[in-house]
Length: 215
Image (cartoon, rainbow, N blue to C red):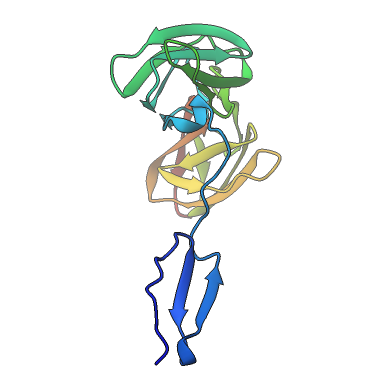
């Protein structure tokens, strides 16, 4: 009788018993050990996550918050200049930075360990700063006007990328900033409130009165 000897399994290789006592060889089932030397950065699990940063604001200063892991120092950069450096005592951060310039601003954070051997940089975030109220012009109707039409048109213009509400109802604004909608009137005095709000949170409001009398 043919003698079968026990073969010790080899990591990364699997042997299977086949007919007539033969052994089949299957490779590549397990990952082979890497011969690459890991750097300290690769060998250490570390991260930075930004949880809150505004896309647009009407304030020259703003809050940026997030979390870090295995980092000690945070450096905040605004338009290529380091504007703040803090040493963290926890795994979360919330810092006020500024001052923003009018228009688009570039913001990123660089984090590092105290020995400066590990560091990472976030992506660059765009923050739009605008602190002027949006333009709001009402072309029709005129304030304190009289009409015998129960339904009237309200037409006007504003800045691009600005939202318009008329009596708390949203109105479509076209690519050039023009808007138009219809409003149904009740008998007597009608107060119409038009509000413009831009992406930075600036607002402008105008109110007008239209008097409706049936013929």
